[in-house]
Each structure stands twice: as C-alpha cells, then as structure tokens.
Image (cartoon, one colour):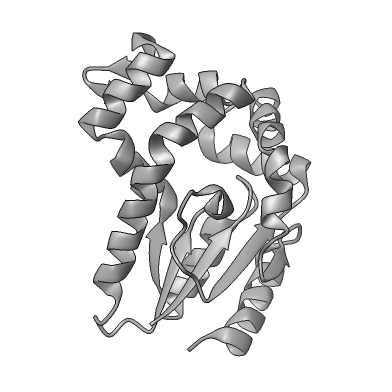
Length: 195
C-alpha cells in the first residue's frame, strides 16, 4: 500500500484535493477528525483544562471554539496544545494506517496540515502541499466556518510560521484558481504518482 500525506494551511484546499483522490479510489484519513478523537480522550480533556482553564471544557468535552480563541491568538498556547495532542495523534494515525495495510487498499491518503510538526509522523511515500494566497484562504475559511473576515484572516496569519514546513513537501499544488484548475492538477498528480 502506498501512503501519501496532503498538507498545507487552512483554506488552501486540502479537503478538495483529498476528495478528488477519494473519487479515484484512494482511502482518505482525515487528520482533523483524528485530532477530534484525540481531544475527546479523558486524559487529553484533563490536560487541556489544566493548561488552558475550565472555560475550554464544557460537559466533560473540549470546547474547540473556546480553545481555538485561545490558541490561535497566542503562538505559545498553540505550541502547548501541540505538546498535549501531537504524541497521541501520531499513534492514532499510525494505528489507522496500519489497519488499512494489507486490506487491499492501494493508496491511503492522510490529510494532515501539520504533518512535519508531528513528533513521530507516520512514514509516507509522497507528501503533497496544497497552497493558496492568504487572502483567498481567509475568504474560504470565513465562508466555510461563518467566522467574520477579520477573524478568518487572523487564523490564517497565525499559521504563517508553518510555511517552511509546507515547503518541505515533495510537490506542491497551487490552488488560487477555480475547481477546474484544481481538478487538472490532481489529474496530473494521479497520472504521475498513483499506484
């Protein structure tokens, strides 16, 4: 089984790319969904409450919106959250990929924005970065989440320090155009690298 990671900043189009790959037969693992699974673990909930305060936990679960307001406004807080969650997230990712290995799956695609920030990222055969202009990303994020444009742009800017990580990818898809251009880029990716 081949393993690909699709990385990049919020609003760049990672999910659109992975959906196109899934339509071609890849099995996609959503790193955000796995991150939510990790945030639901009791030991992680306790660590988040201890580090960020009880206002970030409601009814025994992490309030992701409240936590987001804290960590996206403060790089130190974001780093602290990463310390709490990234170890368990790596273990869960590897467990999910191992479960697919030997199942007849030809290509597993892990959508993971911060793949290179993980302390023990799962082995990949190809890492693809999906990038777009920051203002374009902010508009997409605002449309998808309902954030006001200023808050969306602040979230986009909060991740700008990760640009060197995205530059480490094996190849890059620039997604500043329309859906047809993105589909053509995914076609080229599939033709050149699919199993």
